[in-house]
Image (cartoon, rainbow, N blue to C red; front, side, top):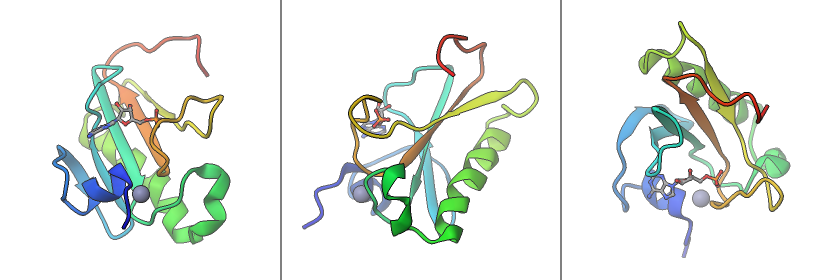
Length: 114
Ligand code: AMP
Ligand code: ZN
């Protein structure tokens, strides 16, 4: 049995506030937003993190970035800018071991991190 939180969200077994979905990706609002707009973009295919990117096809991997940009557009972030964050592993404090990207914006973000 797959015990992954984001796999369950993709499957609709755990509720989420969907922003966008296509063949390869699913995007939804973060439950604990760290910016005025904070959306998570996840690959529909499970792999733990970016270090395991070889588990995904080029199409599946590229779709993540395209969906981040699509989400930014849908959320009205493109004009003033936005940030895409990926946490990979312990030092980055990754908490959910299913590859995902944070799309943050809607306000001026900290200069301190990236
Ligand atoms: P990370 O720390 O990079 O692994 O990011 C995991 C993110 O998932 C955090 O920002 C959490 O707030 C978010 N999160 C955890 N559970 C849920 C949930 N059920 N629905 C939406 N976002 C969640
Ligand atoms: Zn998963």
